[in-house]
Amino acid sequence: MVAHLTTVDMSLRYLLLPQLRAVVERGGEAVGISAPGPWVADLEAAGVRFRPLPSSTRSFAPLADLRAAVELWRVLRAERPLVLHTHNPKPGLYGRVVGRLARVPIVVNTVHGLYATVEDPPWKRGVVYVLEAIAARCSDAELVQNPEDLALLHRYRISPRAVLLGNGVDLERFDPDRVAPGVRAALRAEWGVREDQIVVVSVGRLVREKGFPELVDAFGRLDPDRFVLVWVGGGDPAKADAIGAAELDAAAAGGVRMLGHRDDVPEILAAGDAFVLASHREGYPRAAMEAAAMGLPVVATDIRGCREVVEPGVNGALVAVGDAAGLARALAGLDDPERRRAWGAASRARARARFDERAVVGRVLAAYAEVADRTGVPWPWADGGPPG
Image (cartoon, rainbow, N blue to C red; front, side, top):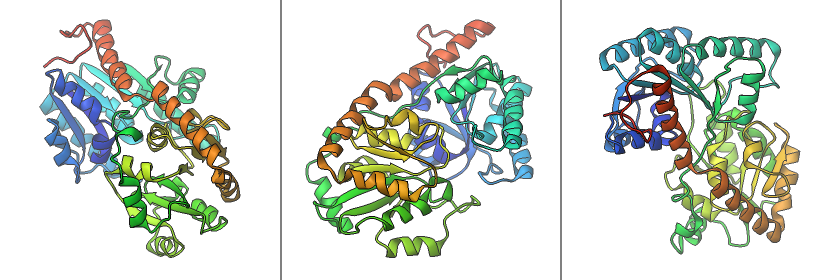
């Protein structure tokens, strides 16, 4: 049995389902552990068994986190998984410790993005790095998505065993050639957008950390008859930096197309002409990789993760965090159709070369087998597949 632990079920569904399916497809049992939510049915339909942590939350709530750790202990003692694979900042910390205390044979963690970067204040970096170092000593393998994080973990000996995992997306689903004819025109008509207008898509939760306010500011500096912003993503009221209703209403009144949560993201990207990500913090942004796979030029903030997706002047542009004027200038440069075409083609080529999630799944399964071999845990699948 392989169990994946996250904060919420959305992460299991939209970030980790390929890894969970890989276990099921190889005859193993996959279990998802997180706060219960609306995506549990999708997990179960894919053959993944779900165990809830009612106290798990994304907000800052130490007492709730302690309760979630106790709930996890009970789940692990009842399920007895062979592998516990932890994700996200909070369950990644307490999950590794609880997994080791519960005597799970193999504990693996994925670092999706350290919660502190070199730009953060020293006190925050110190706290995060110390906690990460403690938790890393409780795992058998540390898989790091971003090479910048990997270099930091090695430099300060926070996690000496950490190895690069990378990140990827479904290149078959995010393929512009698979979008049905007429979809682009139909969606643009739905949004009230002319074909000669430049549609810029952004995907993310409606929180300040995703750069929503400065992105709206940037579009206020552009010609509204030429540029249109389409935002895909729902609210996250549990977060302290959630965008309020009044601000959302003002953005919509200013012309931003607010689509909410959507499952037809490939089609929406195909209806767009460019992609923008104004985030303040990312580990390895999946939305930007998906946009690149769909052949869109990408404008993003100059932060860890985005630097892996965007090569400035080749497939997009990087802008300082919080710089609405810089975002506006970069987006205005996309008024050149030849630049959009060239950058979009480069994005697609970069995605095909670097962002295949099948390779990521293969590296995860190989990590399980390597730990089993190193620690003497029985592992009957020579190709890295999990035991049933």
